Length: 157
Image (tube, rainbow, N blue to C red; front, side, top):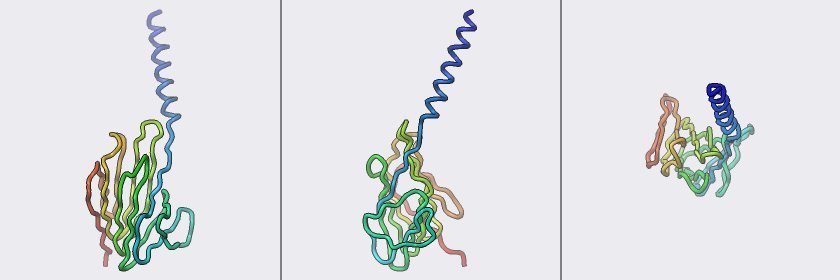
């Protein structure tokens, strides 16, 4: 009899754990252009054409931002408050791969893809141990826990 009760308790705990994970959902975050100079364009997710970037423009997951010669853009990533600043140097192209917050534990996921050019990132300390901030290049992936650093990708000639 004790074994049967133990089995039912274990099954109930398992069902509760699984159902709580099922109700956890990802909430999209945004990036905001706070400063720019020169010619900066964006290709918004699902769109075919590049559009001029304006100050205070909101960028979402899946959007690409591109700077031309003698241009730069400064964007901030928002979650529950500002989480990072990203300065995109001239002749750069950056894809916002993933920008999400888990509504259950507040963990933030930031995944960026630098195809070419240079970015300077001022990452704030991550919200919790489940949060991650990564920047991908054609040759590597860099994970960050909270610091200032730059990443540069040069064109192959």
